[in-house]
Structures are given as structure tokens and as C-alpha cells.
Length: 139
Image (tube, rainbow, N blue to C red):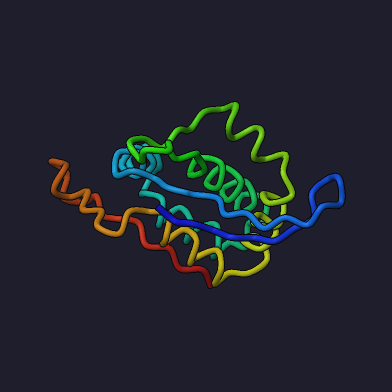
């Protein structure tokens, strides 16, 4: 789980400082890896090398919204839904985070590497030894 804190002015002009949580489970990472030809890291490297800005922007929007959720008070679950993502995407917090990731390669790589589980050993969960954990690097 990765906590991001931002200070921003809301739509009423009120300055707010909030912390939002982002997380992908091993299951979600495996689904992303297996659902992407060559895996997510290879796909990201291809679009970065090609300087394919529209695809990079689309990836980060989807990645942020897929990782965003709300932790239960007792910590037993991290709720995600289309409605939670839709509402978050309408906030100034999302706007600041998205712009930061879209314009700063090191921040983008840091975010991806913090959101993806640190001890993701997809190989041990798969019969396919070619599957490897995602490690993001942005050139």
C-alpha cells in the first residue's frame, strides 16, 4: 500500500491536505502481467522507447484509477469500484497526481514501483517460468 499526500485547493477554493491510498494486490498484478503481451514492464518499455505519449497517458490514467481505493476502518479490506474511481478522477488531488506522473519520469517510476507489491514473485504462482515481476523504469 502506498500513501500519497497532496495539498491543493478544492473547487470551493478551500486549501486541503489529504492522503490517498494506492495498492495493487499480487492477484491484480498477475492479471495485468498475463493480460498484456510480453508483460507490463515490456509494454511500458516499448511505449517509452517509441515516445508514444498518448499511450503513456492512457496507461497512467488506468494505472492510477486501478490502484486507488479506500481502506476500511478496521484494515480488513481495500475497497475499489468503478464509482470510487470515477469520483476520485473528478478531484483536484487526482489532477495534481496525474500531471505529476505524466510530466516527471522519476516520479512516475517511483509511483509504479511503490504501488506494485514489493514481494511479487509471480513465478512461484505460475507454471510459466517466463513470467516475472514488474519493475518500472522510465527513460
